[in-house]
Length: 85
Image (tube, rainbow, N blue to C red; front, top):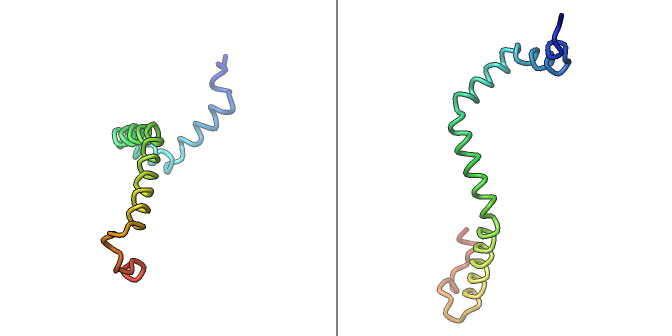
């Protein structure tokens, strides 16, 4: 008697992939660095959750920079920034 899992084509395809030495080596490498992957996921999640705050801060900084550039006492007025770059 065969169980349903053993004859499932998806399970068979997965077994075939796991038999590939390159796939097995890649999975081993991933498992060796699972702690780093978890840290990366947590960091990305935090960045995504704060993306609105980060975007607003960046927009505010650019607005401040534009206002400063048009002010009479702009400290970089005599410097050609394109030439400097």
